Structures are given as C-alpha cells and as structure tokens.
Amino acid sequence: MSPIFRRTEKKKPAERTVTLIGKPGCHLCDDAQRVIEKVCGELGAPWEKKDITEDEELHRAYWEQIPVVLVDGEQHTFWRVDEARLRRELTG
Figure 1 (cartoon, rainbow, N blue to C red):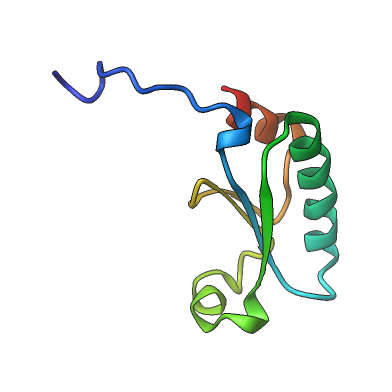
Figure 2 (cartoon, one colour):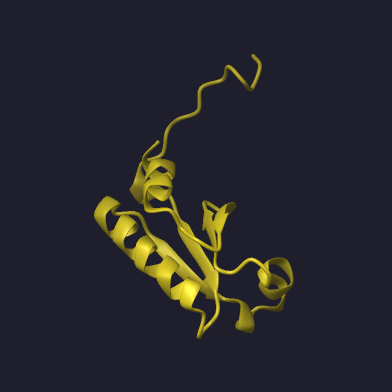
C-alpha cells in the first residue's frame, strides 16, 4: 500500500517530545520557552531545553535560527513560536 494511504497511529501529546534549542540571554528564546511551557503544561507533553553554547553540532546547525523548536526530533518552527500552531501539532 502506498505510504500516502497508509494510516499511522496518532500519538497523544504525552507521547510527543518538544525540544527548545536556544542560548542564554536570548529574549526570543525566553518568549519561546513561555509558550512551550504553557502549551506542554496544558497538554501534558514533555519538553526539554538544549543550549547551543554547550553543543557544537547544535550550534553549527541552528545558530542563525534560534530559538528552534523540534517536535519528536523534527523542526517545527524557529524564531517565533505560535501557540495555536504548536497546540495543533501536538494534538492533531
């Protein structure tokens, strides 16, 4: 069967992982964290924070885009986090 028509099981928010990639002193990172804390807190989704100043690979990959938000390891957004869009991603 074609992957387009194959059904995949929808994950619950608690089974997803949101990752915030940023650095200290970044006001956009602080804004993004507030949105992530709110949405993940309301939905019961786990989240983590990674600092590009402590990880050379993350620094090379994302230094021009921070903050970057990943959902289950895939890039969801960067710079500004839209609360409604993140909520849809986690529940949709």
